[in-house]
Amino acid sequence: MGSTFLILGGSVIALLLAGYWAQHYLPPPKPKIVGIDLGTTYSCVGMYQAVTGQVDILETQDKHQCIPSVVAFSVSGVLVGYDAVAQSEHNPRNTVYDAKRFIGKVFDKEELLQAQKQYSFKLEADEYGMIRYVVSVNDTEKHLYPEEIGSILITFLKKAVERNLTAPVTKVVMSVPAEFDQQQRNYTGKAAELSGLEVFRIINEPTAAALAYGLHKHASLQNIMVVDLGGGTLDVSFLNVQGGMFLTQAMAGNNRLGGQDFNQRLQNYLEEMIMKRIGKPLTDKEDLQALRLHVEDLKLNLTQKTEAEISLELHSLHSTFSTIIKRTEFEEINADLFAKILVPIETVLKTIDMGIEDIDEIVLVGGSTRIPRVREIIGDYFKKRPNTAVDPELAVAIGVSIQAGIIGGMWPLTVSAVELPTQVKKIHVH
Ligand SMILES: *[C@@H]1O[C@H](CO)[C@@H](O)[C@H](O)[C@H]1NC(C)=O
Ligand SMILES: *[C@@H]1O[C@H](CO)[C@@H](O)[C@H](O)[C@H]1NC(C)=O
Ligand SMILES: *[C@@H]1O[C@H](CO)[C@@H](O)[C@H](O)[C@H]1NC(C)=O
Ligand SMILES: *[C@@H]1O[C@H](CO)[C@@H](O)[C@H](O)[C@H]1NC(C)=O
Image (cartoon, rainbow, N blue to C red; front, side, top):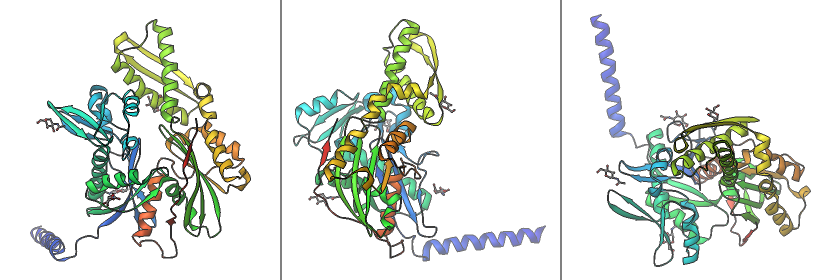
C-alpha cells in the first residue's frame, strides 16, 4: 500500500512539474482566427479545425451554439443572449436587440420616429444621425451605439471560444449582408475591434453560405441563387463562382418579410381564438409577451410535426388557454406571405436576364427556410431541389469560418476563396 502511494504520488508530482514547465517554457498556444456571424436575431462563432478539416460552430451558452442577438441591462448586470431573453418580459425597456438594423446607418427624424414605434426600448439619434439605445438601470442612463451592443455579443462569443480552446482569440473574419455599404461594414468591423479583435476580412453573407456548401471548390462556372429568409428580412442574391472567385451579380430583397411576420399571423390568429373563447381581448403586456414566446415555440414545432399543441396560463384573464394547431392552418394564415418569397427571386432573374434552367445551385439560408412550405415553394419554382444539407441557421457562420481557415492557411493551398468587389445595388420589393 505504502509504496503504491509513493509511486502514485511521484507521478503526480512529475505531472505537476511537466505542467509547470509547459506553462513557463513552451510557446503560448497559437492564437486562432475565428469566424463570427453577427446576425440580426442570432449570433454564432465558428472555427476551422485544421486536423479534422471540419468547422466547429462552438457551443457558447449552455448547450446552445448560437445566442440570441439580445443584450439586457438589469440590476443584476449586463445579460447576453438567452439570459437576456429570459428576463425580457420583465425588463422590456432595457432589453435591446436589432443592433444590426441600426449599425453604421444614418437615420433622419422621420426614420427614427418610425423605428421607435416598433420597439419597447428607447432610441435616439446623435448629432450625425447615428442611432443610440438609451437604457436606464440603477438610476443611471446609458447611451449605447449599435456597435457597442454588437461588441458585447462578440465579447461573449470570444470568451466562450477562449474557454473552449484555452487559447486567446485575436483575429476574426466577419460576415455582413451583401447590401451593406462601406460605412455599415466599417461599423460592423468596429464592433469586433471594440472586443479586441483584429478584423481580417469582412465577407458577404451569401458568399459565406455558398462557401458552407463547398461551392468554391468547383472549377467550372456556377450560377448560384442564395435565398436568405431570416427573422425579419428576405434577401435573394445571384452569385457567379469560378475557381474560388465569387462575384455578386444581382440582389433583391424584402425588408419586411420573415419569421417575425409568420409569428405575428399566428399571434393574431391565437388572440382572436382567445377572444372568442374567453370573450375578452388579451391586453395585458406580460400575457401578450408570454403568448409571443409560445408562438415561436409553436412555429418551430410545426416545422417538425404536422400538428402541435400550445398551452399557457393567461394570468390577466385567470384562465388557461390551450389548443392544437395544424401545420396546414399555419400555412393557410401565411399563404400570401409565403407567396411573396418568389417576388425578389423573379426580380433577380429578370435583372440578370436568366431563366430557372440557368441556375446551377440554390442555397437556402436563415431559420425560416426550415419551414417545409417555404422549401416546397422555392423547389417547385426552380423545378430543382434547393441545397438544404447544411443547417440554414449555421450556414453563414460555417462559411465565414471556412474563410477564416483559408486565410489562416489551415486549408490545403489549392483551395482559395476570394470575393470580388461589386457595384451591384439591392432592389427592394414588397
Ligand atoms: C469545445 O467545443 C466543441 C464543439 O462545440 C465541443 O465538442 C467540445 O466539447 C468543447 N470543449 C470544451 C473544453 O468545452
Ligand atoms: C446595477 O447595480 C448592481 C449592484 O451594484 C450591479 O451588480 C449591476 O451590475 C448594475 N447594473 C448595470 C447594468 O450596471
Ligand atoms: C473604419 O474606417 C476608419 C476611417 O476610414 C478606419 O480608420 C478604420 O480602420 C475602419 N475600420 C474597419 C474595421 O474597417
Ligand atoms: C413544442 O414541443 C416541445 C417538445 O415536444 C414541447 O415541450 C413544447 O411544449 C411544444 N410547444 C408548443 C408551443 O407547441
